[in-house]
Length: 164
Image: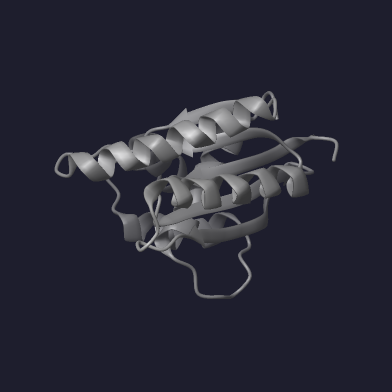
């Protein structure tokens, strides 16, 4: 598939749940094309979990033809093991995006909160309430990771609007 220059593949990195979203600008309006939460089982070895996630991301890139990828930078204060595992997922995502020739944008949680709610100290529920106001989301139950990926994608569209 030929890359769509207005299409962003966005991620909320995680190894148990990887939030993904495909968003794009159509005639100056943000649209949600696809979103999901890719899950892996805690009973699997970590390398297998990365393999499952990596294959799913490769399929998303092939299916949706984005021109760029957007990831949230994740900050952890308490659990070093979790932080290292999420860092491994981020590394895999960065590798796959680069291998596919995608431009990569990274955003801090503060940048996402400001872009979505206008306030950097917003909580998760405020972001979750604003996302459906910014983009039409088909009705279905969504996990926070999926909503966060949509928010990251919208942040990317807003922050690089001159090039997308």
